[in-house]
Image 1: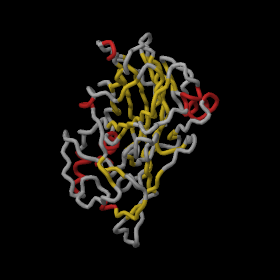
Image 2: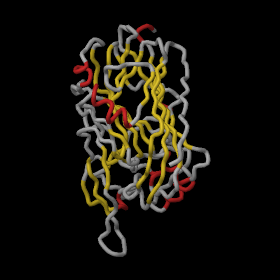
Image 3: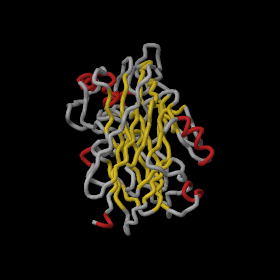
Image 4: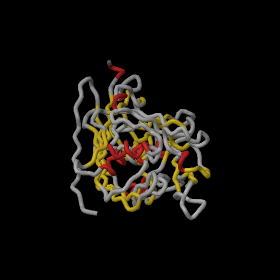
Length: 348
């Protein structure tokens, strides 16, 4: 894969005492093999740079281990998988060292669950030599420990709010948050771009003077909350629209289309009964994926009190997205910019 220059972040200043955190990712995608949907699609997605920045002197800082807080962080596989084992030995960071592979998730299962339920497939199987009536089985993936070669990216992110606000401040996505790719990318890759997802779980908070052990082991206590952000919810390429018609789906560019993500593992499930929006969708395995878009950015993600708040961040390609029906491309590069804004509502 050819080398790429670091993708420079742009921090957008806001009035009314808001703070911007920017997460930028440069991802190179090489498609190796393709057939129907995500069940047999392999992607080689590698992260070139992943940086996070918070504006100085604003009372907000970030950390990967809950100990070393700063206004600037550089995230890499080496840092998450090997570096954190010294300061955060029980972390369960996941990295797509072998390439991102489309999966499906509907977030956490309940308010006491700190991790997303991620479902993978081992591919399409056929009951006959003619390869008709293909079916799949899905598996629930596990995050029992650090894993450099998973199908998605996941890591803990700690926010330290030192603004002294008497009430919890609101944390928002900022309008610079987006996922884009090179302008000369082909339509195959545009469909995958439109299928990208970013997820965040808020676990809980402790006081600023809490011990490292207390901070790192913050639990849900039945208060976990998660969101799924769909950056390109209304964008559909001409090729995606054409392919959707083969499955009886009327896809219109500029209009949102619902995604029905997996909710449990199992099977067999006939491929014809897996397409989001299809009347044949099997209700035993799928549920509407509730996502937020940039039109929801005026609504806070969650609150961060004066103290330390633990969250978990996910990045993946949602295979059940209608734009991932079929893929066949030589690859492209995508850029992920994840921006946060924090207000000081206690003083307003």
